[in-house]
Every structure is written in structure tokens, then in C-alpha cells.
Image (cartoon, rainbow, N blue to C red):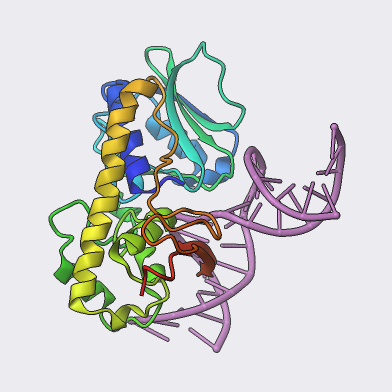
Length: 268
DNA sequence: AGTACGTCCTGATCGC
DNA sequence: TGCGATCAGGACGTAC
């Protein structure tokens, strides 16, 4: 699933592929419900003839500032993929949204489960929800994480999924981080010691940094497509698989309806 | 306010 | 081998 490292990888791919500088000549969608704002007709009208200036990322959102000062905002949802391809190349059948570009290429938004979303806003702040600090930015300190968790009795795993706590975290990296930190996913957040929170903060940074480095290495190899997904999880995402650290049996539970894997021997 | 759960979606995977 | 059932989950709305 696209989480922070996957979205960042997509962003770097789009920059590498030359999206900035291109002008949008048209837009077509086979699933208008995904276009959240403004209404489709106005969305298309306001995109036409606009030049894309850059590709940024905030949390799991991809932000494309246009020459008008407005921002095109994309969220990949659960299965979204973006590809910059020649118009002559056959599109994947699950491509639901297409931006036609001035050089004949197309920015294609593939989205099998239709959880992806698109916005066009004069100010991105109108669209983005309250987001916490970027985990790989300067603001993500142990103190900041402690403040976000203070007084919260919900399972720490559930809180890691909240974008106001750690913007860009998702289910898989939450499990990975808790495993690296040796913290049980069901621990009430408020019960964590400052030391444990510091460990968790470092584990989050490590998990995301490591994934980013792997994507950076593999992007060149898989060009012109970005790599799909990491295969190197430290925590096996499989019931009863052996823990690589203690050899114990990995357990699977559900937290907030999200599949959650952890090692009962290593995570307390 | 904090917590939890249902909803949207359908390709992929599982089980018989 | 085929086919129906189940799984997967980010963000948001709703309920308590």
C-alpha cells in the first residue's frame, strides 16, 4: 500500500520522468467520484493549459503546484499508481484518470480499488486535513511524539495510523516500527515511557529511511517504472512465521480493523 | 475530545 | 480446474 516511502518514491519518479514543466492539455476520468473538488466540469476547465511547476509531497498527498498558483492534489488511496507514459503506449485497464500533456505523453492514474482521490485547490490547505510532523523532518522529535500520545489510551498501533500523529505512516510501517522498537501494538499509548517513545521515534525514522534508501537504489533499475513494493520487511507479515530476532512465532491480530503482525517474544 | 466502527471499492487470494 | 467467499485498507462520517 502506498505509504510515505511509496508516495515519496512516486514523487521522485515523476520528477525524474520530467513531469515538472509539462502543460496539461486535457483530463479524462472513468470514475468521476474520485474527483473531489471542484466539480468535474470546473476541475477540467481549470486544469486546461496549466503548466505544472513541481511535484511535492506532504504525508501521503502528492502536490503539484500549477502556474496559476493553484495546486493539483492527488492521493493514491490503497492501490493507486501514477505513471508518465507516451500516449501511444497502451494503458493498463485499471487506469481510471488520465492527464493529457503537451508533448503527447500522459500522466496515468491507475487505481484498481478506486480509493484514490483528486482535488484542485487555490490553496492546498483547503484540502489537506490536520497533519502531524513529517516523520523524516526536523519536527518529529521524541518530545513531539510524546505530546501527540499524551493522554491517549488507544492502542499505540492505532494512534500511529493517525495522520495527525505521524504524517504519512501507514499500516505496514506502523507494524515495522513497533517491531523495531520492541513495543507491543496493543499497549495503550499513554502507558509508554519516555524512553519507549524515544525508541519508537527512532524506529519510525529507521524504517522509513531504510525503505527510502531501498527505493532510491532500485528506481534506476526499474526505470521507467518505479519499483512496486518492498519485499524486505523485518517483521514477517505472515501468521506463525519465525521471528528473525528470537525465532518465536509471529502473531496476527486486528487493530482498528487493520491486520497487525507482531512478535510476542520481542514486543512488550 | 477520544474512541471505535461502518463505508467505500474490487482485484487478488483462499478454500472447497 | 473452477467458482464463490473472503481479504485488503486510507480516510472519513457517524455514534457513543
